[in-house]
Image 1 (cartoon, chains in turn brown, blue):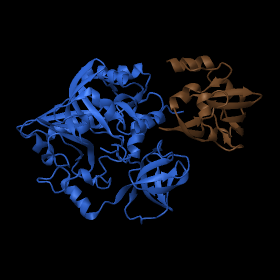
Image 2: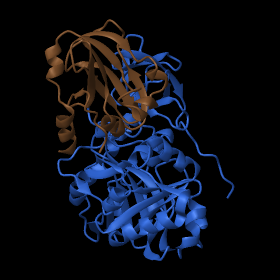
Image 3: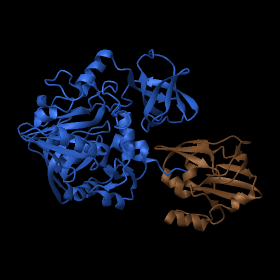
Image 4: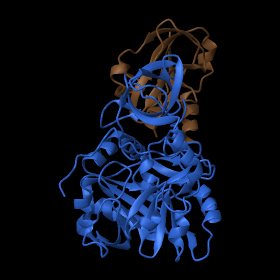
Length: 127
Length: 387
């Protein structure tokens, strides 16, 4: 079973969200990275873009397939991990740390609280 | 996020997923399993790219039991098959194999298949996703007296060993009587097979065929011996051989310019547009189903043609992406993937025949355009080895 850190929240579509002073960092889980296999391309939005909770903010492509990346919260993108494009492997080797994708200045803190906790997400993986 | 999409492999989706006789072997090997053509199949065991390079450089082992295997026996077997396939079975010698299409009345492709001429029967191998469709259709059309049509898919297993070292690895463990030995077996030829490997004995057939662009063999053995044969091959041939999934089978065949049903071929696509003229014998006596429609397409010239492209940039174009010449939509991508061998994204696309050669083309990848550089098919040809 893949690692599911307890310090953050999750979407059922396998994105994680880590909150710090109103800024939410987003990536995909180790389980998702493993399922995707070898990655070939990532498309992330520009800093300043507004994103909506539950909607696509970008896409990630493996050798076999394209997947959408969903935003856990609404708000404005304040930072993107520009190093990923040149080292997509990081998403697989360090999905919860170096593989982070975007940081969002959240506009509604209730959205974060409404996400799955580690226990619920783990239950989903095991079901 | 979408789970890994299996529809990118083509063929139909099925609600009742079947398992091949090798399913437990794949589970034991820790394969990542996906649904393909109605079967739970390994997409990779390690990584797609690693398995792809293994087949190009040494040899890979594939489970092909999901494909359909049909047998036609009796004095009229050859004539019956000839009436429903585009290639010329009566002209084939015993032990010979040929690629062929099965068409509908409009000249569209029901399936692309291999025909095997055996001493006492004709054998057909068809795509997994078309098994049920063809079973019904052949059942209706292969009905003349003096012949019998049977589905042997469940009784006979199919395992491939593909790659430049396949012959030297397999030859010491194989005895044949139709040909002197395994190295004497020619390309697209089949022989009887006596396999003795790692304490496992099995009897069946072996053919020098494949879907990877490399030299290699396909073994046909009784289904109840398939797991033992697979395990004996894997353990005896050791590190020189790796189990390989359908993921690399797809990138290998795409590099080799081979069509995949559900991508380059379907009921609305004729074989001439797909560049498969070599599998069609327009002049054979008594024709075949779809001949009339195909003759008209041949006379008028196909309205679109399959072409190969390198996609500029890092982003692969995928099936369904539209191809543009300026503002005019002129085609559609049928298959696209990063090419592990060429290390660039490659794609096959149908492009309208009236687009002049040399016209600058672009592909729309979900809203972003990327230039297409035309290249001759196949993308990859294996180096010729001295015989």
